[in-house]
Image (cartoon, rainbow, N blue to C red; front, side, top):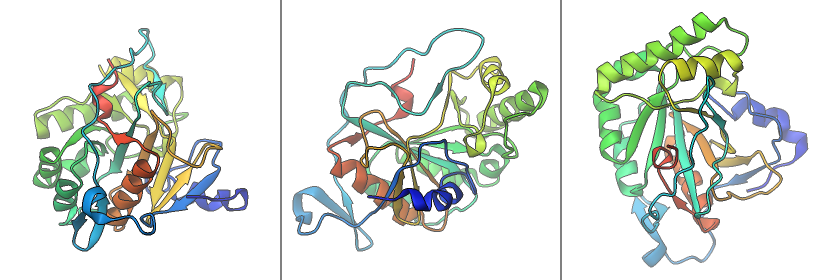
Length: 260
């Protein structure tokens, strides 16, 4: 999983929500092919001819404590001591019929940062994913770039999505992800004032079956947060993310279990 500086511009195009701008420091990418010669018997399970790595159950969580104050904390990685990583999925517009079956086969926890009205148009699709290990979190009402917007606008976007998702799925979001990774102090103040605990960016992105690293270390490290999207390449992206986690000797864990 390796990329070079000459392709940074391409990475910035594919890194986030529809055209998420990646935070600075993009350093590498990787393809998702399974390790050559690895036996499928003990380390892989099959989904429609695709080998998915098998993971042990994540260890009991040792949560980090979010700092108190008027601004919600922003994380792109969690300072954990356990060998876990966190798979997250954004937006929700592309709803492949195979997504639920894929995540059932993958048998891993994951977090979905959903655009409120998009998710509300097809609750059964996302409810199936919740049943397969997913948790629904806040990703605004209309997916604007938040940085520079007035506080009132940002609060409307965050609180409005929180309320809509709570009404639709009968569970109140705790976390927020800013579209395109763009935020400012008003964003973090609005996250706090809307009753959410924390905001999250990412350490790696996945698109079209490739993992793009945004640190000098071209592997997934403990505590890393991996971003992908509900896109046509959903199956390839899930496979790439899980393969990269497995190759790094890590286990997927649930983000919600690791922040108090």
